Length: 248
Image (cartoon, rainbow, N blue to C red; front, side, top):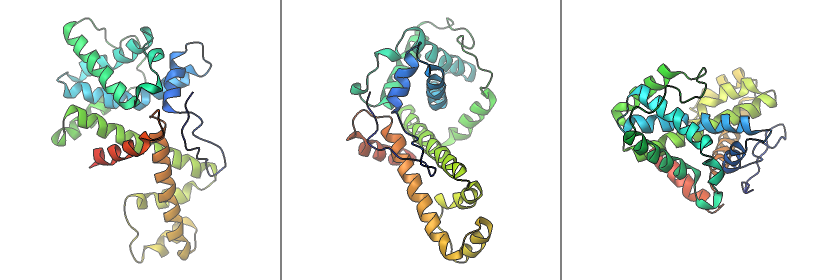
């Protein structure tokens, strides 16, 4: 099993990247694995919206796209497709996009053969929210290929931010995280340090240091997330460039 070249730890000293995304997928393919259910849940959560939006951009309606996304995951399981995937074959992001493209092409050839839900439970799926998100993006969409990469990039950032929040929670610093989080996307202005220091319970001259550490840790976690989706450590830099380009 390939592992990330980086092994970041949380503020509490607990390793949080023990496996690559590839190993999560392979684990999901092993029905007898004790962690298969959690692995499958993570797999579906990470790729649901990018795949749904990809189907919408290919001309399928909201309900069709939901069905096709569900049936795609079912196809992966029922046909044991995940067990045939190997990290040596390349980036998981590329594999998922190509596999979904083929699935949509097959669906067009067999229109009407899909059953609502595809046999998977969808109780936690916010169907209306997913479609609203897609419609909100509709005015500035690129090609389906570009948009899949952009949504992958946003999913990577979201995963990194979630892990960053968890680290601060583990260290009992949730309030500090919430106060400093806005500075992940904007610079600290003159005069803000005093107010931020009071809200975060820090000394004014410590705010800049705390923001710097937060940003650095966020960058490290983004990089670690990217490293989990490639098979070769040398691909990390290329994927980071792809991520930045996709966000532009």
